[in-house]
Length: 206
Image 1 (spheres, one colour):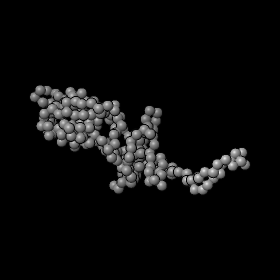
Image 2 (cartoon, helix red, strand yellow):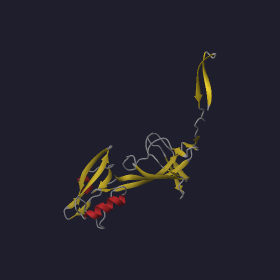
Image 3 (cartoon, one colour):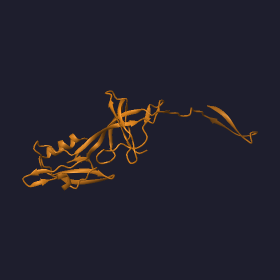
Image 4 (tube, helix red, strand yellow):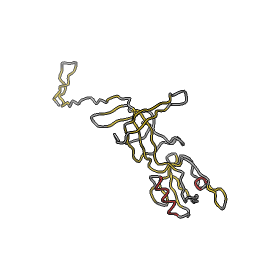
């Protein structure tokens, strides 16, 4: 920092101020592919399955008013952050109706779900994680942050954006690709390394 005198027309002194100089922030531009592993904050409904009982064909999720892409966040007052959480709540209900809270288009809704068991006694029609390959746009070496710009990560079946609970990036070895075409973005295929290289903090369109 230093004292700087402001002048009028370069000659007449007007005011002396204290100026602080800082380095211009820079980032390192990349294009490096990386693997992404994400876990959603809730259980995403990605499919429906009919159950065949003494009463005939039943579909508890559809009967409760759930739709593909709904994100279940609680069941009978228990937080749901994974497929296992929802399965445990359904099994604990023992066939009795349970109240589920879900998000649809940003709004919260409540439904009553009456489960029916299949032959193995399980009910499963949700997804709680996803993985894929992205491209790193830039790295900020001073702050230790990175970004992969383009679009948010969405579910392959429903197209709904994954609501992030946790995630990480890992080095990836590209083993193949599908060239993009009009109406199709293409696809990278690869093998993930075991050790994570960073943490995912946001999954959005910014």
